Amino acid sequence: MINLRYPLILASKSPRRQQLLREGGFEFTIQTSPVEEDFPEDMKVIDVPTFLARKKAEGLIQLSMNNIILSADTIVVQDERILGKPGSPEEAKEMLTLLSGKFHWVYTGVCIVYQNKCTTFHEATEVYFKELRSDEIDYYIKHYAPMDKAGAYGIQEWIGLIGITKIKGSYLNVVGLPVAQVYNKLNELNLLIN
Image (cartoon, rainbow, N blue to C red; front, side, top):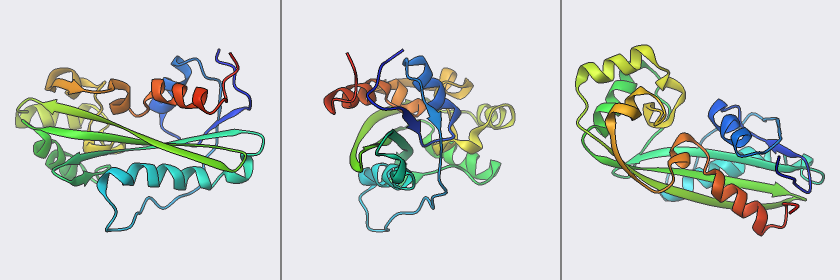
């Protein structure tokens, strides 16, 4: 296990983030506070995930004197349009149809808070989908869980396995947490015990 100077609290209910952190050798507890995932309309798209990650962490800032708070937010962006979590199967199909045959960006914003000090960064990955047939999209929506994922897909699920032809950047960023970058930032902040 990785040794940290303070206990780590993950401010996320995402099972994917939890799994990635565990596989990365981190021990942590999970605690979240309710947050409205809204942002200023005029905000640059690239700033949205770090803004949201910071909001999630700030809800737990009172715990940061004796803990490290880690939060993250992932968005999918197609032609400057943010594709969040779909609200219905129809919206999921619309999103996947929009992504079909094109490339898009996945941005994950990360916030690390300790002793009331907040550090944010983001990671960007370019993802390319083949032309997806309508029946492939329907199959994915019926048999998997696109509703809890930005852009209505999980790269590690069936649609990613058969549909993604290329990525440029961090694969784990697309899953939901760029673990290497988190590890490196904790090291930079002198929060790892080597």
